[in-house]
Image (cartoon, rainbow, N blue to C red; front, side, top):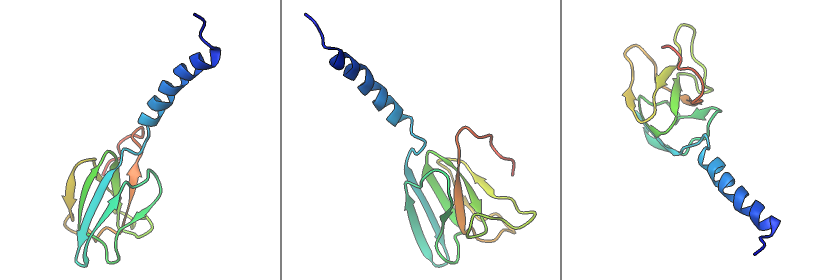
Length: 118
């Protein structure tokens, strides 16, 4: 029995497309945060870019994503001189480090990038 070439190509391409979709850089999850003014949840934060927390900032962050985070003091993912971003690994929670201001934003860390020093 003869198999059509288009069927053969389709049977080879579909599993490759499924595999590529499974290797996405956005594993999903939730970043939960709370501060003086309440709490918030950010569902499936996109890799890269700057994500803002609620007005007034937060002092507790629970990272339930597959990505590591950098927590920033500035609302535009910046930090004052001498105070680098706080590194929060995936699936861990943290609270305010003594002497630090509230966090106002965060960025995701590329899984292929080296881990920054605090």
